Image (tube, rainbow, N blue to C red; front, side, top):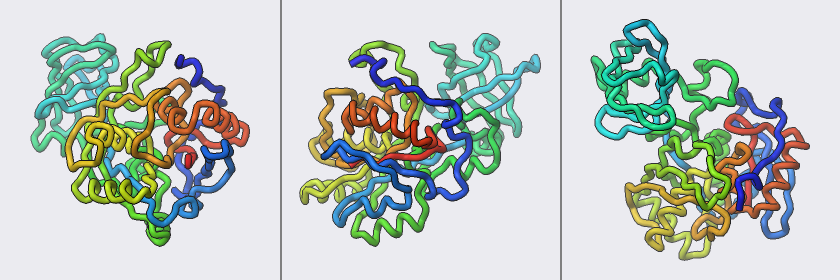
Length: 341
């Protein structure tokens, strides 16, 4: 299929710029694949969509403040957006403006943190090595800014450090939030458990591949960048038991989905592992593990919309998106969600 088949018209005013006052107050479009229907609900209705024996899978990655603003010795301002740590204290980063950076130049940040340019890469990326008066990650935590997506047209505020983070985030390493999880509260999680649903956590550190633009026309020519994930022994046992009992695995987010499908399709079962999710889910892919999906609304012509459409069916999902626009749902990271069963 062509990426143009995953386009839709979205008024700018429907792109959520801030979260709602209450996490669980978001709207939720419930999409039923069995009868090609969809219906309007609220997120706090989610427990009623689940059944005893289901396993709800959360991605417990934690966003770190990956956007750094510093200066060259000339005084010129430089922004580094950290993408991936490739070696100890060595990172690949998106640099802006990249034309000012030359090999060996040093970008200095507050608090004694600095980064030396090791290599200039493609697409505005650079390889840099950090130095600090303390552990580099601790220094980054102090001076970095929350890496809000570019469609949020405002500066970051202190509240973003809390709200652009799930309530169960515990494993630092993501440069973007697994946004489907932003709606959960401890009370909703308790209500889920009260339904006889087991909750397990895995980790996939959301990286640049999750939101890298699709730059080709034919989806067969696009591959999503690999991202690191971890499945614990307990998670593997619980997931395998669910599969053996024909119980439904409910993935919270596309990142969780990609990790689960990568793991199961590689081994034919879930195993405890640290590995790379290198699976690109596109039309024609047959899901082997995930039986239901909670997800936010994604950008037109994005790999995430392609994944969701592959899971839910292209026509049904695109019709659902058109309904969401007409019904004035809030879109993207701080927006509303859909549950596909």
